[in-house]
Image 1 (cartoon, rainbow, N blue to C red):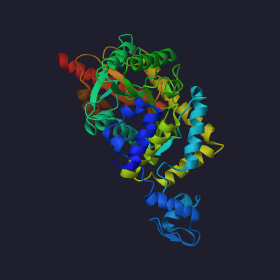
Image 2 (cartoon, one colour; image 1 turned 90 degrees about the horizontal axis):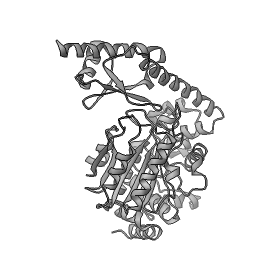
Image 3 (cartoon, rainbow, N blue to C red; image 1 turned 45 degrees about the vertical axis):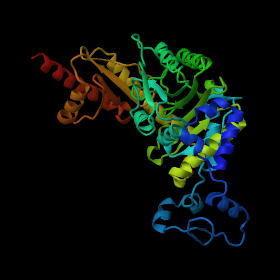
Image 4 (cartoon, helix red, strand yellow; image 1 turned 90 degrees about the vertical axis):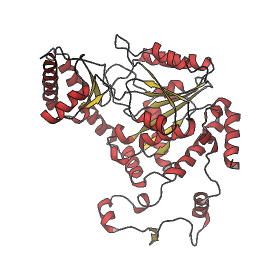
Length: 436
């Protein structure tokens, strides 16, 4: 093993032996090279005042070489903020601005010990880093039956983790704390679990109530007290899009410092929060009372970034930072939030109107981009999806046998009734065909 990796492993072990035990084999082996090209280039940037012949970019007239056909379109920005490589951990100013934003929007973080957000190539990249650092073949990853399919690819297929699902909702359509607790405690013999908490949930658009959030935290604490090491990942992709009474904070704040066997990791990003999906700017943040643990995990994360994408895109980091600093940012974001809330409320009023009887119910939704219909027995989700697509020109997502996900985020409020009318008509046709 490389001496740098061993050094950081020892620091993490000293800071919290449980976190060291959570690391995968790859997580223990990875390190960020202190004597490599990047570190030598950084040293040269600070001291090479005459010629700096270290880093692999081309320069001209004292700045990065560039083409005017590109710069003319981006003339509001300095070439130095666009064309050079961003640091592996991201632009320092962006990291600081995002940390301030996290504290402002999550009061429970006040006084808690957590690291500086590290820039990722959006949320999937952040989850991939978690998988590489902590998931070995056979490790349990515990998440609900209503989930984003990329968890299986990222943790199951790529890293060989064992998928453990629990039912998201009780029969009363509340968060199923008991099923969650049971799934956690079943990992006692293995002694380890990775636990993504995705709220607002994709695909259902559900965020737990404050009480349910407290119950989730209590279940995690109980599992930790039972001797289970827990890598708890708050997947906050749709953070801030809370339309009703629910948790309005990430559970990351309540989990920070809760128990030595709980490692909270927050994955979030500008992609969906700030409506810049294609910019691919996300963040990964670790919480720990140990400075050594935070430093070690940051170094290992930088090593993982260096070994995969080298660094995230510089222009989009600049664009996001510029937006965060703008005095108009909050007002413009609130305008878009109200549009999204109006669409969600419209969907709920339509579904509660009584006009769509006899073919579906729906799962609770109060946040995010999506809602999910639960089709009555005899109506197959895939059959309905196909009929909507080919007979009515309507695109939806079939999940399993009976669930149909609808993204109200991309449908104008005035068109939502027509969308659900067509969906209902197609469902009735399938139901009638079944009985003929």
